[in-house]
Picture 1 (cartoon, rainbow, N blue to C red):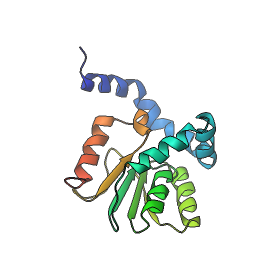
Picture 2 (cartoon, helix red, strand yellow):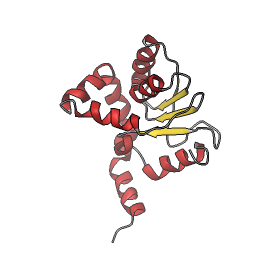
Picture 3 (cartoon, helix red, strand yellow):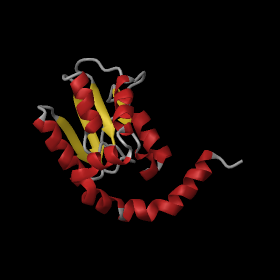
Length: 158
């Protein structure tokens, strides 16, 4: 039986070049229509899944929340609608996606502190966030590295 680590290594070998050299261009091309296209392609199912996902997240006033691979900040905006006093942070490697998300949040009166970075190395101190979210992006990631980083920045019990 093949271990998860060896499967992850094989996946990295197969996709590393694409992840490093092509993903940014893809997301830059689709940023403006990304959410509409996803809703259309899923026949509206994605919207319901997102509502259910948000409903599972308990947030308290003033908590620090990080959305990893935030894209257009859909999750962050929904969490701010649920609890407007959150200190909401977003990390993503796509500047184009984050620009769309920042504009969308701003139009709704929300502030999301966006960071463009490699999510495999989060630019935050240990035990910094009360809640960390990640949705659907694992196909683009070295999951062991990202989950280790999420664990590092998430407060105990978060």
